Figure 1 (cartoon, rainbow, N blue to C red):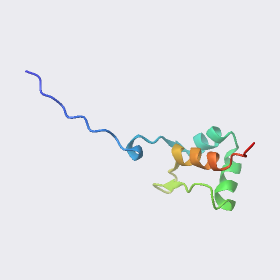
Figure 2 (figure 1 turned 60 degrees about the horizontal axis):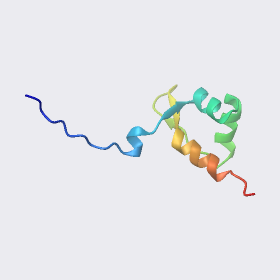
Figure 3 (figure 1 turned 120 degrees about the vertical axis):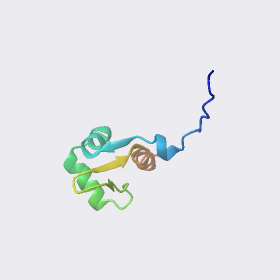
Length: 74
């Protein structure tokens, strides 16, 4: 006898990929120092999420939205 398992669709928060600082820098093709400077100086840059003293990450979707906002119209 098989029991049916209800499948609940995941929200975007649950499926959103999280990137550690070095991963985020690589994703944006910048150095970790440049990532730090962007976070410190650009008020439109996504805020990092801090879970501990040494554990921080960015949501990939936030970085994608920031990149899209930086696109230049042709």
